[in-house]
Image (cartoon, rainbow, N blue to C red; front, side):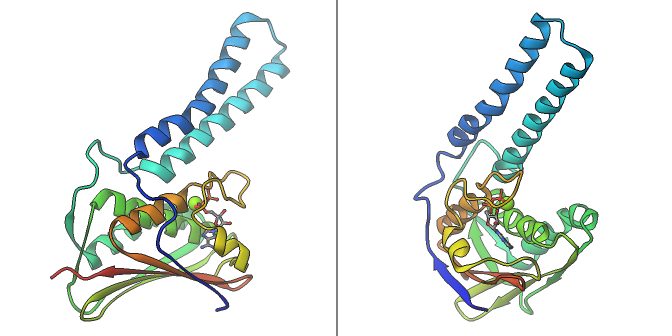
Length: 227
Ligand code: ADP
Ligand code: MG
């Protein structure tokens, strides 16, 4: 694969997760409020009302996507260090995303490492980071396909590879991954990868992305192995 990039960090810290998401949610909420107030004040035609309903629904969907990318698993306490089984944790996320992938005709496969190895990090943030990568992989295969996740261990490192055979990315697109609001999707937030990069960085891990336009993408995560 041609477009390779190693990334360490895009965002220094995610201690401001909660502040960021409330800020982002303000826009769709303001807009929903505005349209509802308008409809209360005036007698609009049925047609006009339905138009407003569409706009409101779109704003609700935007708010939902934000919540999905930021904190499906959020909890009030941040920065805890959990000892996690790499196999169980990663394959567990795949299980959670099964119904979603199924609805998009994508099959998910989890290949566990032979030995039981542990990684350290905040469990819920790690799940969020994995969900964001895997969901992007599924979304990259509009006609369905296979997504393979492989966990491997060496003496000091743990590798988690997420491989799709989707639309792939150009070198420029790979370089922009993790940049806030970078999205090529009609309804994208452009925030999922930003969250992922900062979480992996917090775990002292790194991300290598191999991608080729039209062929697919491999996200390779590298973590220190816990004793
Ligand atoms: P969003 O998914 O809301 O667009 P993300 O931060 O999750 O935002 O991803 C940013 C962009 O990176 C996507 O819009 C897409 O263009 C690209 N991208 C991420 N993962 C993949 C992938 N597996 N295959 C192809 N493109 C990807
Ligand atoms: Mg995404």
